Amino acid sequence: MTRVLVVEDERPLLRALAMNLVARGYAVTEAESGARALAALADQKHDAIVLDLGLPDISGVEVIKAVREFSATPIIVLSARSGSADKVQALDLGADDYVTKPFRFEELDLRVAKTLSERANNRRGYYRSCSGNGSPGFPIAITGPTRFRTSSSSCSGLNIIM
Image (tube, rainbow, N blue to C red; front, side, top):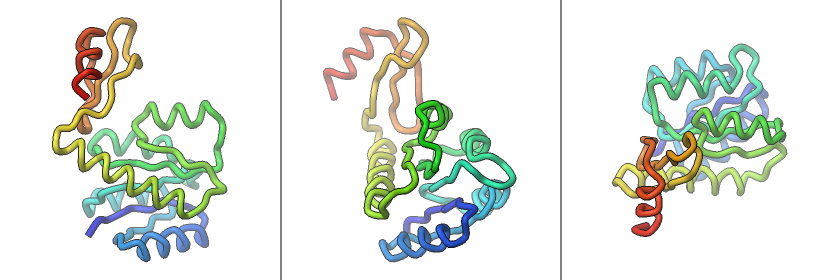
């Protein structure tokens, strides 16, 4: 069964998220703080993380950084922070998707399923993307959970075989 870690400090929303995901067939671990989230990740393998950025102890951004030190588990940020800078920072640090509160459960369900599907395809070695986000002249290609710098011509070649 696919296990999702839900990290949210607002208890009613945490329960609603957990119940929604359980109803969709996921096993859910709940955490109300960044420290509890990191402890849960150390104790058990999770297939995805739904993460609020505004946590009481450790910011969600710091949780993303910590998780990326040891895991490629997909992270879907769920946050009231709707500014472009917040989204860019979370995604740049390794979040896989970003959902802004308020949200509809159907949207979150779709994004969790899509992120898990993409990750499953990447584990099989499928090419994911090639973009100009690397240093000038060195785009970044992403295959599975790995990012690597490549040349512009290699990036073009990857786009052709996709």
